[in-house]
Image 1 (cartoon, helix red, strand yellow):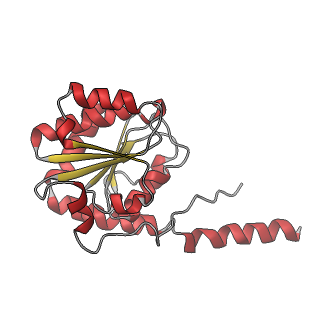
Image 2: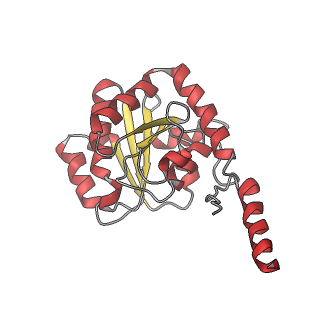
Length: 206
């Protein structure tokens, strides 16, 4: 059996060249955490809020949530119950997710499971380290300790600790930024699409 992964468009998802994206999202002294999802229960969006609550106690930060879905109201309630409203931005559905990712310092993906982890890959292509669940296809994308950290699903304290480890250590964050981009390039359309084309040619030639 041959496994060919999904791919990321590096023309849409690429590192920022300046801080213009960040300026749109948060105050200058804030660290920016991002989560992108369809707000369904499997995404564990309330875990995102809990992680951010811990981070926010330790340093100035803004949480940016992209997307919409059935658990958005639950997420908003969690934000309000933790007194975080002024530091959380619900953007809803946006046309260019890459622009938001380019303004981030850290991407959170605490899903119960993921078929592949494309959201993490898109963040990595934008030079954003990832703290994610070691579940489903995510470990195929995120290398623990290199492009981010992997933690068992539901381990909010573990994810919070690793988020702060990255955000408080500029050298570690920079190393992970570089590793994230290099890892994402392995899944670029330029590298993966030819493998699909070759497979189709093989099948059609039989």
